[in-house]
Image (cartoon, rainbow, N blue to C red; front, side, top):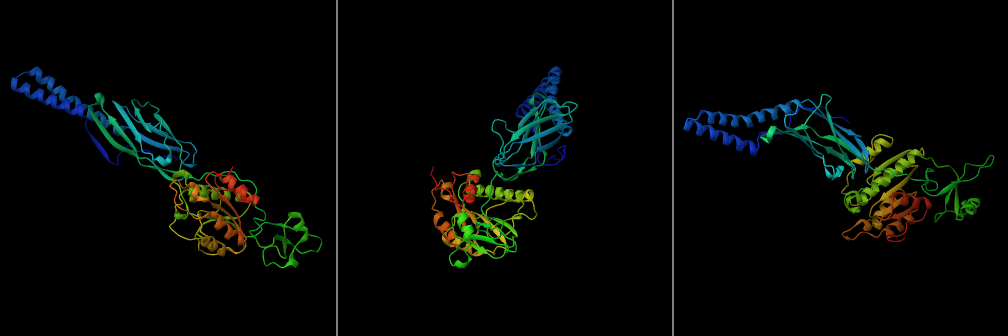
Length: 417
Protein backbone atom coordinates (compact mmCIF):
# COMPACT_ATOMS: atom_id res chain seq x y z
CA UNK A 1 0.00 0.00 0.00
CA UNK A 2 1.36 3.39 -0.99
CA UNK A 3 0.06 6.58 0.56
CA UNK A 4 -0.54 9.71 -1.42
CA UNK A 5 2.47 12.06 -1.52
CA UNK A 6 2.17 15.20 0.54
CA UNK A 7 4.01 18.48 0.67
CA UNK A 8 2.86 19.11 4.21
CA UNK A 9 0.17 21.71 3.46
CA UNK A 10 -2.27 20.34 6.00
CA UNK A 11 -2.12 19.30 9.61
CA UNK A 12 -0.84 20.84 12.80
CA UNK A 13 2.39 22.83 12.56
CA UNK A 14 4.73 24.78 14.78
CA UNK A 15 7.62 26.95 13.74
CA UNK A 16 9.96 29.45 15.28
CA UNK A 17 13.37 29.98 16.73
CA UNK A 18 15.03 27.51 19.02
CA UNK A 19 16.37 28.54 22.41
CA UNK A 20 19.73 29.08 20.77
CA UNK A 21 18.18 31.18 18.02
CA UNK A 22 16.18 33.32 20.43
CA UNK A 23 19.24 33.88 22.58
CA UNK A 24 21.30 34.89 19.57
CA UNK A 25 18.57 37.24 18.34
CA UNK A 26 18.29 38.85 21.77
CA UNK A 27 22.06 39.26 21.91
CA UNK A 28 22.11 40.85 18.45
CA UNK A 29 19.36 43.30 19.36
CA UNK A 30 21.17 44.23 22.57
CA UNK A 31 24.41 44.70 20.67
CA UNK A 32 22.72 46.93 18.09
CA UNK A 33 21.08 49.07 20.77
CA UNK A 34 24.38 49.51 22.59
CA UNK A 35 26.10 50.40 19.30
CA UNK A 36 23.51 53.13 18.63
CA UNK A 37 23.90 54.51 22.16
CA UNK A 38 27.68 54.47 21.95
CA UNK A 39 27.70 55.60 18.29
CA UNK A 40 29.81 52.58 17.28
CA UNK A 41 29.07 51.74 13.64
CA UNK A 42 31.26 48.64 13.51
CA UNK A 43 29.53 47.26 16.57
CA UNK A 44 26.16 48.04 14.96
CA UNK A 45 27.11 46.01 11.91
CA UNK A 46 28.02 43.08 14.13
CA UNK A 47 24.69 43.37 15.96
CA UNK A 48 22.73 43.42 12.71
CA UNK A 49 24.57 40.37 11.37
CA UNK A 50 23.87 38.49 14.60
CA UNK A 51 20.16 39.42 14.32
CA UNK A 52 19.98 38.23 10.72
CA UNK A 53 21.48 34.77 11.37
CA UNK A 54 18.45 33.25 13.20
CA UNK A 55 16.02 34.93 10.78
CA UNK A 56 17.82 33.47 7.75
CA UNK A 57 17.90 30.06 9.48
CA UNK A 58 14.16 30.29 10.02
CA UNK A 59 13.54 31.04 6.32
CA UNK A 60 15.71 28.07 5.27
CA UNK A 61 13.79 25.77 7.63
CA UNK A 62 10.48 26.90 6.12
CA UNK A 63 11.86 26.36 2.59
CA UNK A 64 13.00 22.85 3.47
CA UNK A 65 9.53 22.02 4.77
CA UNK A 66 7.84 23.32 1.64
CA UNK A 67 10.20 21.68 -0.84
CA UNK A 68 10.27 18.13 0.58
CA UNK A 69 7.57 15.63 -0.43
CA UNK A 70 6.96 12.30 1.29
CA UNK A 71 5.10 9.05 0.56
CA UNK A 72 4.63 5.98 2.76
CA UNK A 73 4.49 2.39 1.52
CA UNK A 74 3.43 -0.63 3.62
CA UNK A 75 4.85 -3.94 2.41
CA UNK A 76 2.44 -5.66 2.68
CA UNK A 77 -0.58 -3.58 3.71
CA UNK A 78 -2.41 -6.77 4.78
CA UNK A 79 -0.51 -9.19 6.98
CA UNK A 80 -1.01 -11.94 9.54
CA UNK A 81 -0.09 -11.66 13.19
CA UNK A 82 3.57 -12.15 14.03
CA UNK A 83 4.54 -11.66 10.36
CA UNK A 84 7.18 -9.05 9.40
CA UNK A 85 6.00 -5.85 7.69
CA UNK A 86 8.28 -3.23 6.18
CA UNK A 87 7.36 0.45 6.14
CA UNK A 88 9.17 2.60 3.56
CA UNK A 89 9.22 6.41 3.53
CA UNK A 90 10.15 7.91 0.16
CA UNK A 91 11.38 11.52 0.18
CA UNK A 92 11.76 13.83 -2.81
CA UNK A 93 12.65 17.46 -3.21
CA UNK A 94 15.29 19.50 -1.48
CA UNK A 95 17.87 20.63 -0.94
CA UNK A 96 17.85 20.21 2.81
CA UNK A 97 19.40 23.13 4.65
CA UNK A 98 20.37 21.85 8.04
CA UNK A 99 18.53 18.61 8.95
CA UNK A 100 15.11 17.02 8.48
CA UNK A 101 14.03 14.89 11.44
CA UNK A 102 11.20 12.42 10.73
CA UNK A 103 9.06 10.59 13.29
CA UNK A 104 6.31 8.11 12.34
CA UNK A 105 3.59 7.30 14.87
CA UNK A 106 3.03 3.55 15.32
CA UNK A 107 0.87 1.90 18.04
CA UNK A 108 2.43 -0.82 20.15
CA UNK A 109 -0.09 -3.35 18.79
CA UNK A 110 1.39 -2.89 15.31
CA UNK A 111 4.73 -4.13 16.64
CA UNK A 112 7.42 -1.46 16.22
CA UNK A 113 10.79 -3.03 16.91
CA UNK A 114 12.31 -1.38 20.03
CA UNK A 115 15.83 -1.51 18.59
CA UNK A 116 14.79 0.44 15.46
CA UNK A 117 12.20 3.07 16.39
CA UNK A 118 10.65 4.89 13.41
CA UNK A 119 12.70 8.09 13.84
CA UNK A 120 15.21 9.32 11.29
CA UNK A 121 17.41 12.32 10.54
CA UNK A 122 17.93 13.24 6.88
CA UNK A 123 20.72 15.66 5.92
CA UNK A 124 20.57 15.34 2.13
CA UNK A 125 18.09 14.28 -0.53
CA UNK A 126 19.64 13.38 -3.85
CA UNK A 127 18.22 13.88 -7.30
CA UNK A 128 16.63 10.41 -7.18
CA UNK A 129 15.20 11.03 -3.74
CA UNK A 130 15.84 9.16 -0.52
CA UNK A 131 14.22 6.18 1.13
CA UNK A 132 14.21 5.20 4.78
CA UNK A 133 12.63 1.99 6.08
CA UNK A 134 11.76 0.43 9.41
CA UNK A 135 10.30 -2.97 10.37
CA UNK A 136 7.07 -3.88 12.13
CA UNK A 137 5.98 -7.22 13.57
CA UNK A 138 2.29 -6.95 14.54
CA UNK A 139 1.44 -8.95 17.64
CA UNK A 140 -2.32 -8.29 17.62
CA UNK A 141 -4.91 -8.63 14.88
CA UNK A 142 -6.87 -5.52 13.95
CA UNK A 143 -6.86 -2.44 11.73
CA UNK A 144 -3.87 -0.42 12.93
CA UNK A 145 -3.08 3.21 12.06
CA UNK A 146 0.50 3.76 10.93
CA UNK A 147 1.14 7.49 11.11
CA UNK A 148 0.89 10.41 10.99
CA UNK A 149 4.40 11.23 9.82
CA UNK A 150 5.80 14.33 11.48
CA UNK A 151 8.75 16.22 10.01
CA UNK A 152 10.88 18.66 11.94
CA UNK A 153 13.07 20.86 9.76
CA UNK A 154 15.98 22.27 11.72
CA UNK A 155 17.81 25.22 10.16
CA UNK A 156 21.54 25.71 9.92
CA UNK A 157 23.34 26.04 13.26
CA UNK A 158 20.18 24.82 15.01
CA UNK A 159 18.79 28.36 15.30
CA UNK A 160 15.29 27.69 13.92
CA UNK A 161 12.90 24.78 13.45
CA UNK A 162 9.66 24.03 11.66
CA UNK A 163 7.51 21.04 12.72
CA UNK A 164 4.57 19.82 10.68
CA UNK A 165 2.53 16.73 9.88
CA UNK A 166 3.63 15.57 6.43
CA UNK A 167 1.58 12.39 5.95
CA UNK A 168 -1.79 11.23 7.22
CA UNK A 169 -2.05 7.73 8.77
CA UNK A 170 -2.27 4.61 6.62
CA UNK A 171 -4.24 1.48 7.50
CA UNK A 172 -2.41 -1.75 8.28
CA UNK A 173 -4.81 -4.70 8.41
CA UNK A 174 -3.53 -7.59 10.55
CA UNK A 175 -5.56 -10.78 10.11
CA UNK A 176 -5.52 -13.80 12.45
CA UNK A 177 -2.81 -16.37 11.98
CA UNK A 178 -3.97 -19.52 10.19
CA UNK A 179 -2.31 -22.74 11.33
CA UNK A 180 -2.26 -25.95 9.34
CA UNK A 181 -4.78 -28.56 10.48
CA UNK A 182 -5.05 -32.18 9.42
CA UNK A 183 -7.96 -34.57 9.07
CA UNK A 184 -11.54 -34.08 10.21
CA UNK A 185 -13.89 -35.75 12.68
CA UNK A 186 -15.73 -38.75 11.29
CA UNK A 187 -18.91 -37.86 9.39
CA UNK A 188 -18.20 -34.12 9.41
CA UNK A 189 -19.83 -33.14 6.14
CA UNK A 190 -22.53 -35.83 6.22
CA UNK A 191 -25.08 -33.50 7.77
CA UNK A 192 -25.40 -35.60 10.91
CA UNK A 193 -22.82 -33.79 12.97
CA UNK A 194 -21.84 -37.09 14.60
CA UNK A 195 -19.24 -39.73 13.78
CA UNK A 196 -20.49 -42.13 11.18
CA UNK A 197 -19.57 -43.93 7.98
CA UNK A 198 -21.16 -44.91 4.70
CA UNK A 199 -22.16 -48.54 4.52
CA UNK A 200 -21.28 -50.69 1.55
CA UNK A 201 -24.02 -50.68 -1.05
CA UNK A 202 -25.06 -53.71 -3.02
CA UNK A 203 -27.02 -53.78 -6.27
CA UNK A 204 -30.53 -52.47 -5.60
CA UNK A 205 -29.81 -51.72 -1.91
CA UNK A 206 -30.89 -48.40 -0.40
CA UNK A 207 -28.38 -45.57 0.06
CA UNK A 208 -27.38 -46.41 3.64
CA UNK A 209 -25.56 -44.19 6.12
CA UNK A 210 -24.74 -45.09 9.70
CA UNK A 211 -24.04 -43.13 12.86
CA UNK A 212 -23.27 -43.96 16.47
CA UNK A 213 -26.07 -45.35 18.62
CA UNK A 214 -28.00 -42.86 20.73
CA UNK A 215 -30.17 -43.68 23.71
CA UNK A 216 -33.69 -44.33 22.45
CA UNK A 217 -32.73 -45.69 19.01
CA UNK A 218 -34.54 -48.84 17.95
CA UNK A 219 -32.41 -51.98 18.05
CA UNK A 220 -33.78 -53.10 14.70
CA UNK A 221 -31.88 -50.18 13.12
CA UNK A 222 -28.50 -51.42 14.37
CA UNK A 223 -26.12 -51.98 11.44
CA UNK A 224 -24.12 -54.98 12.62
CA UNK A 225 -21.40 -54.87 9.94
CA UNK A 226 -20.54 -51.28 10.78
CA UNK A 227 -20.79 -52.08 14.50
CA UNK A 228 -18.18 -54.81 14.08
CA UNK A 229 -15.98 -52.50 11.98
CA UNK A 230 -16.04 -49.54 14.40
CA UNK A 231 -16.24 -51.58 17.62
CA UNK A 232 -19.26 -49.55 18.82
CA UNK A 233 -22.97 -49.72 18.18
CA UNK A 234 -23.87 -48.07 14.86
CA UNK A 235 -27.44 -47.48 13.66
CA UNK A 236 -28.66 -47.28 10.10
CA UNK A 237 -29.99 -44.13 8.44
CA UNK A 238 -32.40 -45.08 5.70
CA UNK A 239 -31.73 -41.93 3.64
CA UNK A 240 -28.55 -40.01 3.07
CA UNK A 241 -29.01 -36.68 4.90
CA UNK A 242 -28.83 -33.55 2.81
CA UNK A 243 -25.65 -31.64 3.62
CA UNK A 244 -25.81 -27.84 3.43
CA UNK A 245 -22.28 -27.22 4.73
CA UNK A 246 -20.54 -26.56 8.01
CA UNK A 247 -21.20 -23.77 10.48
CA UNK A 248 -18.23 -22.72 12.61
CA UNK A 249 -19.54 -20.98 15.74
CA UNK A 250 -17.12 -18.61 17.47
CA UNK A 251 -17.89 -17.66 21.05
CA UNK A 252 -16.65 -14.07 21.43
CA UNK A 253 -18.46 -13.22 24.68
CA UNK A 254 -16.31 -10.95 26.77
CA UNK A 255 -17.23 -12.70 30.02
CA UNK A 256 -16.31 -16.10 28.56
CA UNK A 257 -12.64 -15.29 27.98
CA UNK A 258 -9.61 -14.43 30.08
CA UNK A 259 -6.13 -13.05 29.50
CA UNK A 260 -4.82 -9.96 27.77
CA UNK A 261 -3.24 -9.07 24.46
CA UNK A 262 -2.00 -11.69 22.05
CA UNK A 263 -2.02 -14.35 24.79
CA UNK A 264 -5.74 -14.02 25.60
CA UNK A 265 -8.09 -16.97 25.23
CA UNK A 266 -10.18 -14.96 22.76
CA UNK A 267 -7.18 -14.70 20.41
CA UNK A 268 -6.70 -18.47 20.70
CA UNK A 269 -10.37 -18.95 19.81
CA UNK A 270 -10.18 -16.59 16.82
CA UNK A 271 -7.04 -18.32 15.51
CA UNK A 272 -8.65 -21.74 15.89
CA UNK A 273 -11.91 -20.65 14.21
CA UNK A 274 -9.99 -19.06 11.31
CA UNK A 275 -7.86 -22.19 10.92
CA UNK A 276 -10.89 -24.50 10.98
CA UNK A 277 -12.63 -22.36 8.38
CA UNK A 278 -9.56 -22.35 6.12
CA UNK A 279 -9.06 -26.11 6.59
CA UNK A 280 -12.65 -26.98 5.68
CA UNK A 281 -12.66 -24.59 2.72
CA UNK A 282 -9.59 -26.33 1.35
CA UNK A 283 -11.47 -29.64 1.70
CA UNK A 284 -14.25 -28.22 -0.47
CA UNK A 285 -16.82 -27.75 2.31
CA UNK A 286 -19.28 -24.83 2.20
CA UNK A 287 -18.33 -22.98 5.39
CA UNK A 288 -20.05 -20.21 7.30
CA UNK A 289 -18.49 -18.68 10.41
CA UNK A 290 -20.95 -17.14 12.86
CA UNK A 291 -20.70 -15.55 16.29
CA UNK A 292 -22.40 -16.89 19.42
CA UNK A 293 -25.62 -15.03 18.54
CA UNK A 294 -25.81 -16.63 15.08
CA UNK A 295 -24.73 -13.51 13.16
CA UNK A 296 -22.43 -14.23 10.18
CA UNK A 297 -18.89 -12.94 10.64
CA UNK A 298 -18.19 -12.23 6.96
CA UNK A 299 -20.55 -10.96 4.28
CA UNK A 300 -18.66 -12.51 1.36
CA UNK A 301 -17.63 -16.06 0.63
CA UNK A 302 -14.05 -17.27 0.66
CA UNK A 303 -11.11 -17.21 3.02
CA UNK A 304 -9.92 -13.62 2.50
CA UNK A 305 -13.25 -11.95 3.41
CA UNK A 306 -13.46 -14.24 6.45
CA UNK A 307 -9.99 -13.32 7.69
CA UNK A 308 -10.59 -9.61 7.06
CA UNK A 309 -13.77 -9.77 9.15
CA UNK A 310 -12.09 -11.74 11.94
CA UNK A 311 -9.27 -9.18 12.02
CA UNK A 312 -11.62 -6.49 13.34
CA UNK A 313 -13.90 -8.76 15.40
CA UNK A 314 -14.45 -7.40 18.91
CA UNK A 315 -15.83 -9.05 22.09
CA UNK A 316 -19.57 -8.96 22.78
CA UNK A 317 -21.34 -8.26 26.07
CA UNK A 318 -23.90 -11.09 25.70
CA UNK A 319 -24.10 -13.26 28.84
CA UNK A 320 -25.46 -16.49 27.34
CA UNK A 321 -25.42 -18.75 24.28
CA UNK A 322 -29.07 -18.49 23.31
CA UNK A 323 -29.82 -17.80 19.67
CA UNK A 324 -31.38 -19.11 16.48
CA UNK A 325 -31.24 -22.75 15.56
CA UNK A 326 -28.73 -23.91 12.99
CA UNK A 327 -30.07 -24.37 9.47
CA UNK A 328 -31.15 -27.89 8.65
CA UNK A 329 -28.52 -30.08 7.07
CA UNK A 330 -25.55 -28.12 8.44
CA UNK A 331 -22.91 -29.53 10.75
CA UNK A 332 -21.71 -27.37 13.62
CA UNK A 333 -18.18 -26.92 14.94
CA UNK A 334 -18.17 -24.59 17.96
CA UNK A 335 -15.16 -22.89 19.54
CA UNK A 336 -16.36 -21.97 23.03
CA UNK A 337 -15.04 -19.96 25.93
CA UNK A 338 -16.14 -20.51 29.52
CA UNK A 339 -19.60 -22.11 29.68
CA UNK A 340 -21.88 -23.03 32.52
CA UNK A 341 -23.97 -26.22 32.17
CA UNK A 342 -27.02 -24.03 31.50
CA UNK A 343 -25.25 -22.19 28.68
CA UNK A 344 -24.08 -25.49 27.22
CA UNK A 345 -27.70 -26.65 27.29
CA UNK A 346 -28.73 -23.50 25.39
CA UNK A 347 -26.21 -24.30 22.66
CA UNK A 348 -27.27 -27.95 22.50
CA UNK A 349 -30.90 -26.87 22.12
CA UNK A 350 -29.99 -24.76 19.10
CA UNK A 351 -28.59 -27.80 17.30
CA UNK A 352 -30.42 -30.89 18.58
CA UNK A 353 -28.67 -33.11 16.06
CA UNK A 354 -25.39 -32.79 17.93
CA UNK A 355 -22.12 -31.33 16.74
CA UNK A 356 -18.48 -30.78 17.58
CA UNK A 357 -17.04 -28.36 20.12
CA UNK A 358 -13.65 -27.23 21.37
CA UNK A 359 -14.25 -25.96 24.90
CA UNK A 360 -11.52 -23.69 26.29
CA UNK A 361 -10.46 -24.08 29.88
CA UNK A 362 -10.13 -20.30 30.31
CA UNK A 363 -8.92 -20.66 33.90
CA UNK A 364 -5.52 -21.56 32.45
CA UNK A 365 -5.40 -18.14 30.75
CA UNK A 366 -6.47 -16.31 33.92
CA UNK A 367 -3.41 -14.97 35.70
CA UNK A 368 -5.54 -13.13 38.28
CA UNK A 369 -7.19 -16.34 39.45
CA UNK A 370 -10.77 -15.22 38.79
CA UNK A 371 -13.27 -18.01 39.30
CA UNK A 372 -14.50 -19.59 36.07
CA UNK A 373 -17.00 -22.37 35.32
CA UNK A 374 -15.69 -25.93 35.33
CA UNK A 375 -15.34 -26.96 31.66
CA UNK A 376 -15.93 -30.61 32.55
CA UNK A 377 -19.54 -29.93 33.60
CA UNK A 378 -20.33 -28.06 30.36
CA UNK A 379 -18.59 -30.75 28.31
CA UNK A 380 -20.70 -33.45 29.96
CA UNK A 381 -23.93 -31.60 29.09
CA UNK A 382 -22.88 -31.36 25.45
CA UNK A 383 -21.79 -34.99 25.28
CA UNK A 384 -25.14 -36.16 26.67
CA UNK A 385 -26.77 -34.15 23.88
CA UNK A 386 -24.75 -36.03 21.25
CA UNK A 387 -21.82 -33.65 20.83
CA UNK A 388 -18.16 -34.55 20.60
CA UNK A 389 -16.12 -32.24 22.82
CA UNK A 390 -12.44 -31.62 23.41
CA UNK A 391 -11.19 -29.38 26.21
CA UNK A 392 -8.13 -27.22 25.54
CA UNK A 393 -6.05 -25.11 27.92
CA UNK A 394 -3.46 -22.40 27.42
CA UNK A 395 -0.69 -25.02 27.35
CA UNK A 396 -2.12 -26.46 24.13
CA UNK A 397 -1.84 -25.23 20.56
CA UNK A 398 -4.77 -24.85 18.13
CA UNK A 399 -3.40 -27.82 16.19
CA UNK A 400 -3.48 -30.02 19.29
CA UNK A 401 -7.02 -28.94 20.15
CA UNK A 402 -8.19 -29.89 16.65
CA UNK A 403 -6.30 -33.19 16.66
CA UNK A 404 -8.03 -34.13 19.93
CA UNK A 405 -11.41 -33.37 18.39
CA UNK A 406 -10.58 -35.43 15.30
CA UNK A 407 -9.43 -38.32 17.46
CA UNK A 408 -12.69 -38.19 19.42
CA UNK A 409 -10.93 -37.98 22.78
CA UNK A 410 -10.70 -34.98 25.09
CA UNK A 411 -7.51 -33.03 25.53
CA UNK A 412 -5.85 -33.87 28.82
CA UNK A 413 -6.53 -31.44 31.69
CA UNK A 414 -4.36 -28.38 32.24
CA UNK A 415 -0.98 -29.24 33.59
CA UNK A 416 -1.06 -32.83 32.41
CA UNK A 417 1.90 -34.01 30.38
